[in-house]
Amino acid sequence: MNAFSKTESAYEKFGADEPFYAVLTEEKYKRKQLDQELFFGTGEELLALQMQLIQDRKIDVPRGTALDFGCGVGRLTNAMATYFDEVVGVDISSTMISNANQLKRRSNCTFQVNKRADLSVFEDDQFDFIYSDITIQHIPSPQSENYIRDFFRVLAPGGLAIFLVPDGPVLRPNSLPARLDKFYREQVRPFHKRIRGKYEVQVHRISQHRVETLIEESGGEIISVESHPRWAQRSKRYKPLYYWASKPLS
Ligand SMILES: C[S@@+](CC[C@H](N)C(=O)[O-])C[C@H]1O[C@@H](n2cnc3c(N)ncnc32)[C@H](O)[C@@H]1O
Image 1 (cartoon, protein in one colour):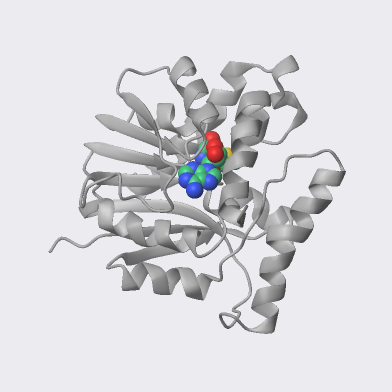
Image 2: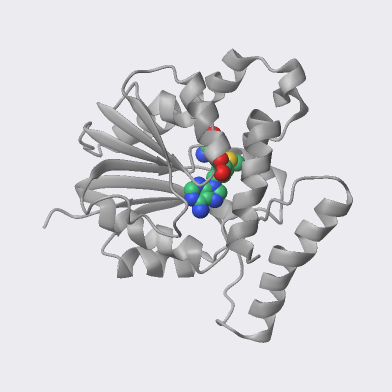
């Protein structure tokens, strides 16, 4: 099984056993003691913050259709549905999507499974807004890079994409350090998790330079790159960056 399929099967299992904890790995989100309002409240809070930033920066985002990439149980999809006419949540895991459908809070959300390593299920220029949080980090390359490229194909001219990717060192493709890093993240860490009885979720990084190149090559225009407020202080090794990029009106 390759690294991409391993992620898929880890989230199929995780989504069936502990779907909320799979999203926010804190004990309080395990099924036993779960407070659903608290869980979905975190999504509403985060979206409110991002929408406020959009407004403060005077970015004019059309409020038609939006995509939540890697939606899980719909924590952010439902929150996005307050601001957009129609929101599509897409996820590789059918157990996650089945939970999302059961827990759906707003009629203008739909959820769909996509097991492909790209977004070919969507048309060009389909979405005014794309949001993706704590998802790309779980996808190995080159698949993660395919999705980032595809964001700018499915984004409508004048639309905005915001997505989170942990920063990593600039490594020459196929160089020894790059291969060692890939092996560690795809094999060693998941194996270590498995022997400790944990889910084999992978955590990947892409250098800021590489993500910016991907955005530009895909026709996106970078608006800003900023660190995640919470993690910026918490960890030296995990440095998630939010990329804000638009697709220019042609
Ligand atoms: C940590 S959860 C985050 C869920 C959601 N973004 C949130 O913040 O509430 C990561 C999600 O990414 C999904 N995922 C992993 N690989 C994916 C892929 N290739 N395409 C779509 N979703 C994927 C997983 O199934 C899981 O639901």
